Image 1 (cartoon, rainbow, N blue to C red):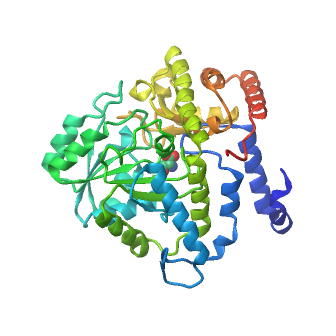
Image 2 (image 1 turned 45 degrees about the vertical axis):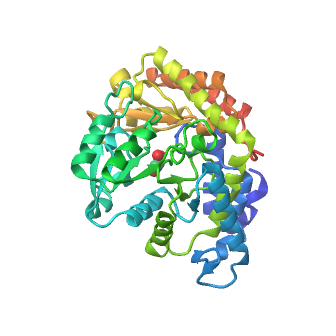
Length: 423
Ligand code: DSN
């Protein structure tokens, strides 16, 4: 490690050793968790800056404490860049992460007892879209649509409309954590108009694809609100954000809901890091990056198809693949995750649509290309990684083979070091 953590090294060996270990782990292994990425050093520096010292409750020009001349600049730059990236009128960059962004959006748009129509959770929805383990289900009523066909991933828009007409949701929710296809946003908007619902897109996973112009922008297609994290395909610091297409009334409700409704002082160091990453995403090179994420995922899809591993949705049109390793190879998702970890490939077990197994021991694995694309991997490397994944699973009890694969992966990582700057 370079000596950039020298203060921690001198002061706190325990934490230094953990950071050092993590840095080596990231450098020497392949990160395929589709919600993770590698940020630039500029983003990390902002996160570790003096802005961490400052309290800034309120919004630019309207704070509760003094000394805000520089924090206002930071937040204004972040908001302006976010609006430019996603072509919308209002941005709230204060949500601490994706779950708080979703909760704040619900409280801005709903009264207790109101209904939200979202995706069935085993079909790709997120915990905050109404999983019974969250407190949200004690407050709001969640009803669900599904995919029509898991072989294509197409959403059942007819079923969605029928449920909407019957349940009269106040919010129709799109956007998922484990879904590999593009959506027909216009259909959502049509149905929402028919029942007087607000459309909310949770773009956490694909915000970078939208910003890079390789996926449609739900806001441009008529969605009212978009929530997102900033740390996945968008390649910023861990954090959240809520965008409003054009309604000032909705945007004001959202601002009030984030603060003082739900959160306290914003983390200005993190907002500065968000602003820097939005600047990086506005750079023309980000478009190339976003395009390569898709091309790389397609390269992995090709191998999984050729080697007869079933993919939910039949493949991918975005950055991720959800593979039924239990159905195709007889290996449960947890075991697959563990074996792949041994050879230096990090991904996560995941439920598949209508999974016959339990959520904590599901049938699938979920993996994607945002982080390896940041590293500079192209189609050739991605095809090879896909082969190595299946080779590992097919040889899960063969130590010599796994050692050989681990060495090959170490070599790939050396050849494609994690970059420190993208502009
Ligand atoms: N944990 C995130 C993901 O991996 O998709 C969602 O919250």
